[in-house]
Image (cartoon, rainbow, N blue to C red; front, side, top):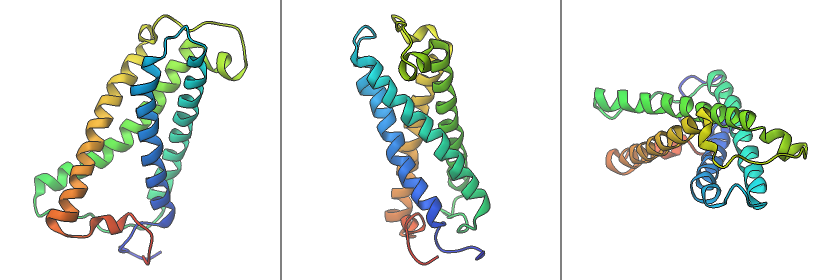
Length: 179
């Protein structure tokens, strides 16, 4: 294993970009699609099924990503020249992992409390509640989503600052190529 390579492992790069896409899709679906479909509509179960499948996939892929991250060599931490910004960057990365795992867990807890797996995947009779807000994990899920969106935005701002402000080619570290 090469010490301090110039790029992340290709498996980690693949997982990073796949997860970025899935997380944006799942959050977009939760924010813009699910909330606009009444719980009495037959379309709601199909939308929930897609959202749940994405959520479970995200949770599993994040676990794989964490394992790959811990088992492979990676570039040295990119420095901004500011201890405060470096600490913010480290906190943002840890926060992204924690919030994504918390989103998956709170989504799964909501689904279980509402009996969604039986309704959606086993075809059992049942009806959706008037509002999922009666489930505490759903309320938590909504707050985590807002925090995650804010942290993703901060992450993107940090990448732009590194790439174009510091001109340290940070993006090349999370892309494919010679390590």
